Length: 115
Image (cartoon, rainbow, N blue to C red; front, top):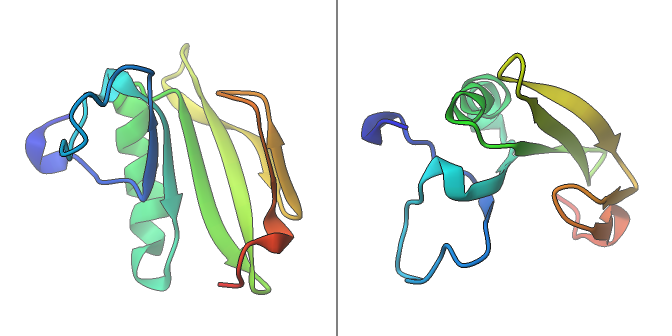
């Protein structure tokens, strides 16, 4: 990604061995496995539209968008379709998040502090 177009995700997961220097604040797109955006009222359009487009264009294979619904997080999970270069929705998780790609994780979303 171009330096001026490089968005900063709220959370990212890197390939093992990538973050040798913990002071590093930017990473190559090919080292990012997952980018996560937590949508707030002032970032809605960027987090729902612009940032996913940039992440997909950069080839980041997984994107999650977290939004608030009735005081609890809802996680929208996407995977990059290599044939189209676009993200494809693979799930919407409301009470719990359980996925095996890009890694095994299970979270009780109702136990996370209310937004």
